Image 1: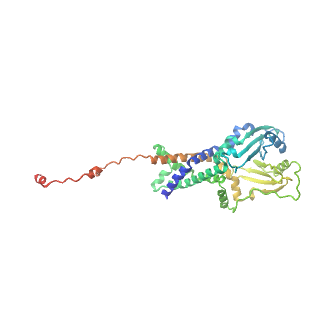
Image 2 (image 1 turned 120 degrees about the vertical axis):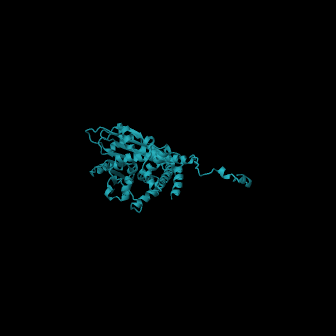
Image 3 (image 1 turned 180 degrees about the vertical axis):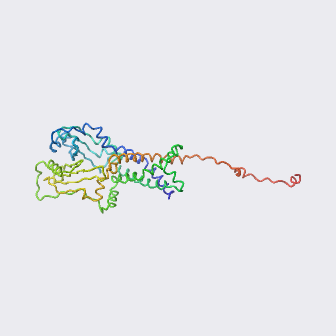
Length: 409
């Protein structure tokens, strides 16, 4: 078992090492994306709350749309309960299945965010997310800045190999003898660098094993649909649950009356939910509903959230998906991003995810040096013992004493 694990560990490590290094480094950078972005863009993210009330959402949308022009339609709005946060209006358009493209940038036509003060209605700033630092880090992490289908296949396959590497690495870590257990939990820092490198790879790999496996398992969801479907089945869902509720058709075609966006927003606020963030999708056509995602509680385990669906013509609510009504698979899917990035229990688990991801980036490097050291290991000369003869001595013919010599003796 150890010999087989050793062969698998070596060759899969060679095949996926570079990709694992890139994915792990970009992953640990992205862990604190929200905190660093808000800090470096504080002049547009945060505002001072005045005594005035929030202006109508439709008016804010109109201001944001003017800054982008008519060609870039705003598709979603992010509203925060924090009174000192600006509202974010996002416009994006991409084609993940576009052909004859070589990079992610060719697939994305635009992806921009406009920040508006909800009390004064003033324009605060605009961020081109397509070329923003953390978005590029995320795209490297997910698809190496390649076209989505190609890049995600490469990253997903390498992460699958890494998952096997973690399992075979554990098999190789198990000592053969009872005395070997003492050497499996500590690093001999005063030894030579090769021994320190070996211990770091083995001992450190053992300690990060469960968290590293969790990060890989949750990350593969964005690479393979069959992997996501498998997790759903493991959690009790026979098929992939549906988060969208289709809009019912009306008997008579009626044009939208009044300002539906303000009506939908007010109806969502009237539910008196103590939400952290609310995301409203803005449909381009009346045949598409308004979908409101209400994030209630984040960073305390399951990401508690509700979905509300409003008719694109009348603005009346026709469906909902509440947290208590969700299946186990749906609760997991809403929380999978936080599990993967470490935000599932706030700052403490983010720090843990950062450290584990950073250590995973060292595993291909330390593993390569272990292989390189064994390959170029110099053989030490064997010391001779008093009872041993050299090969030249063994080849010498035995000397015989003649009978005359014996007589003379």
